[in-house]
Image 1 (cartoon, rainbow, N blue to C red):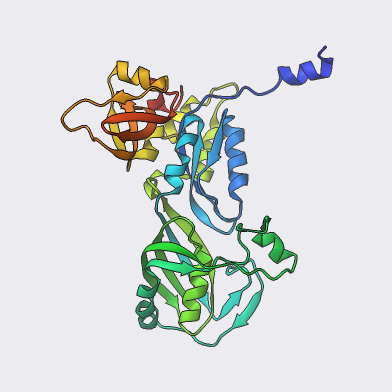
Image 2: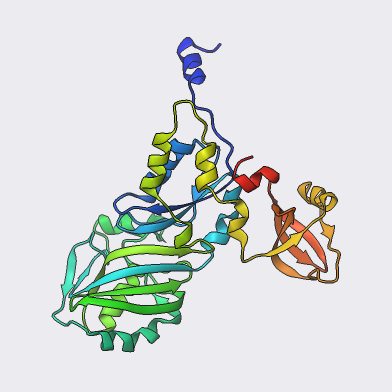
Length: 328
């Protein structure tokens, strides 16, 4: 039997909204990714939500947030390239490789622009990188940053990373340099700053960090956090979230722009929704493809693989024409 106070609690429990799509948030400096996500949950009250790639509190910029069926495309976004703009201050290395930590080594050396540009090619391509001691990597089941905060000596092994581009943007003064890096997943910009400083015969740490691109999402897609909060505050009491979804949420398919698309007929789309494979027709239909997504009238139906001209779904989307507006 339901108790009276439990019934009242259930009565006033906020209704969850069905939202499908991507909100590309411009996370401000000073809050965690989870704090930003918590605010988004309070604004949209979605049935399902998650983000693709954490940003440190002392970093700002692009934080992709997935609603509903878009959560199934999170791996495609996280596996994509990322672009960061960051400032390095020379003369000091910290135990966290950024401004949060304590200075552990200092140097009087201040490299000029020519010296910096001369060593940057060494950090491009597939390179080995030792992650910062204060990182989320697990060591014997424990997070490295937890061990480091407890005073334990943390030894992390070097890992291969892909650095596609590394440019010197400017040197505001002799103590600072601003860089832009385009890299693959698993790259630590803090470790990059540390290693560049050591290579130049000095020491360095990150003093500013901003993410500009994650996979298919770039600066033009970003929604300023303050703009989103202000728009939510302007909604009248009792108003739905449809205006916010229409203005700020991108369709699910935006996350799959670099994936082969297979247009389907309504009959084939229905077979795919039931998890059955379909034989692709047409002279230009691919015979083999490790990753593709099937669509009906532009709306994603499933992600899967093509083998010998047959599309086999691996993840099916529950989307229909309303997905184009972000909601279902």
